[in-house]
Image 1 (cartoon, one colour):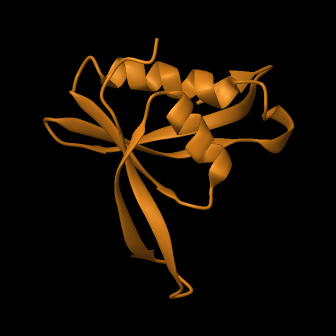
Image 2: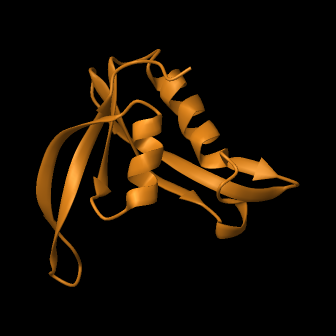
Length: 105
């Protein structure tokens, strides 16, 4: 969680782990704080910390979430596997798995 003036402006969750990798997800920055690099800063911090514990950090993102994909790629994530995933509406959508194996800073 990243705060500015006692207000949460960006969040990111560590959502799971194995001995070899950690998963992150739930990246969100409130609209009025976007395009300032806050989400990128928060992701870079957590990725750096996690890579001290595991050899890789992974995430899954919906393939039409272009701002998120651009953010993750700018941090060094690469696509490892596209996959189909269901949504609550039962609509099928394409998602892709991404993996980061080096320190972004």
